[in-house]
Image 1 (cartoon, rainbow, N blue to C red):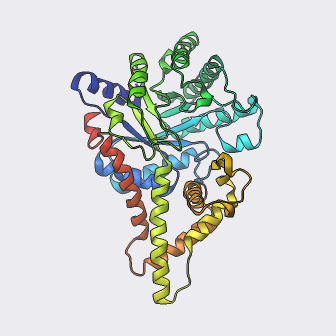
Image 2: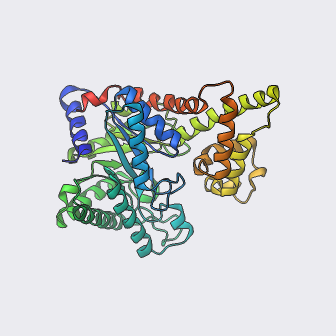
Amino acid sequence: MPKLRHTILRLIDLREHEHTNLTLLAVCPNSAAVLEAAVKVAARCHTPMLFAATLNQVDRDGGYTGWTPAQFVAEMQQYAVRYGCTSPLHPCLDHGGMWLKDRHTRDKLPLDQATHEVKLSLTACLEAGYTLLHIDPTVDRTLPAGEAPAVPVVVERTVDLIEHTERERLRLGLAEVAYEVGTEEVHGGLVDVENFVLFLELLKTQLAARDLAHAWPTFVVAQVGTDLHTTAFDPAAARRLTAIVQPTGALLKGHYTDWVENPADYPATGMGGANVGPEFTAAEFDALEELDRRAARLTATRRLEAVNFMAVLEAAVVASNRWQKWLQAEEQGKGFADLAPARRRWLAQTGARYVWTDPSVVAARRTLYAQLALVAPDPHAYVVEAVARSIEHYVDAFNLYDAATWLA
């Protein structure tokens, strides 16, 4: 039995027999500081931690973090040693599917090539020791814009990717892994309850037909009211979908949990897990912005050369063109400088995760830390702790303090 699957069964048992509700937190490791902060929190709160890495973040080409799957897991393990973390840490793949890596969409890969690339990445995740794989073939760039693949097509492609992964797992002689299926996006056709039920029914039938019943998912993802621009979790929707999913042995998982207004409702409504990512980038951004203000005062009093870290960071975001991904309809075609100041800051904050490893940003950050070290003992620790406090907000709301003991 895979360790994460055991954790989920124990979580279900706690709910049904001990009236204890927990929701597992999945941190998107979009930077080294976020990964370090999450391991630090897992250690001092004695809680399991999931790390949901997308193919944009971590992949065979290094992603925007610079990590391959093996390097990502090794980095996680190094932080575990540094902080004496004894609670379970689970490296996970988030959104493993065709065209969900920006480069594949940009390069307009055909279906067979996009599928091949995803399968190679799934194998790399297995080799690195990932314990949960999100299988998400809910995007089809060969269809007209705005058109979603039919649910039977989504199921067929889901099972095909799981079958590939299981073959590779056996070839590599690895223990079972846990799976996550579905999506929170409308393009997957899984938000409608009828489609949601149809997806689960077809998935069960096709997995059994291919002798893959043992690979039944641990998590099923669905829309529970939140997305990139909304922060209101819908308890009624969560209860309804949980009632559908839980009898199958899986749990409901929410994405886009960033800045959610009512996080304590997640465990109360039976949510098994929740992903948080951009919020932690924002915490890192805000901490660096404060340090940059302090550095400006320091350089003035000590007559040092100004770092202007935030200006360097913004320039890197603009040069990456990643900010254009988040433009709203009325902003299309505008240059970055033509946008309102509040929007420019939001886009820089959101897009910062794509450029933390840009050489200009790395150099400016190094200089920033070096100057502040003249008066502050550890500027980097200040940033990591700022992210850690943001993560602990969810640990507390999800009843995860000392959860490693509950779930042992």
